[in-house]
Image (cartoon, rainbow, N blue to C red; front, side):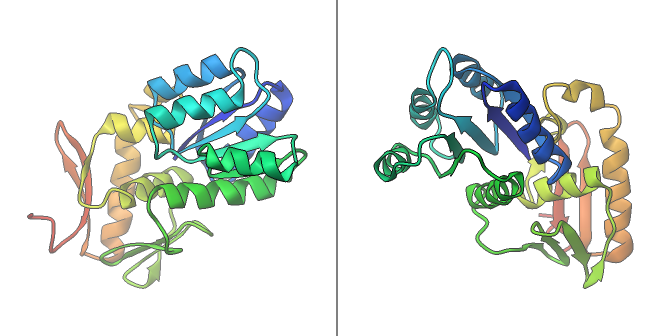
Amino acid sequence: MRVLVVEDEPRLAQNIGAALHDGPGYAVDVCHDGEEALLYCATADYDLVVLDLMLPKKPGQEVLRRLRQRDGATPVLILTAVSETQKTIDLLDQGADDYMTKPFDLGDLIARARALIRRGKGVRQPALRLGAIVLIPADQTVRVGGQPVELSPTEYRILEYLMHHPNAIVSKRELLEHLYDFTWEHHSNVIEAHVSNLRRKLRSASESAVLENRRGRGYRLTSSDEASA
């Protein structure tokens, strides 16, 4: 999952980015003004935007309006120092998905970020399921054929992204962009190793769990009875 944090106070932006990266393991990009935020969103696809309202160059409300004109699907979590009820209602009417009033608890922010990303992916149930594979985002556990499977953080993130795109071919570039920030090119030579380890662990737990390498096209996660489709 990839998140953009837009916050003009450098230390707070750094703390939010570190919490989202070190906790759920999201890839996090950080910027500090409204114009830069719109440029980032035009360059990459994000699973969540954490957006401060009081920004230089373009205020958060204008960034939110432009994002909703361009893309109505990406969840937006607003950070605001304003606690007035009417202004909060106005933000939600303008397209915000949730808001937090400063100061806030980073643990609460992580929980809300996870919920918004699940909602944005169309995931209403607490678990993702594909054949014998069950992935529970709340505690980042995986069971295959009823047995727990231990994954590294990167393997888990790969599986989670593929579980959100069942039976679809996901290109290596797309996968890397959602696993890492704008330095993803530096990780491209190791992604095959992570996928290979993940494939081995899934197949060791259940022969029905199939992670295919479509040469020159990407990766496809499916169940064995769908693999030939």
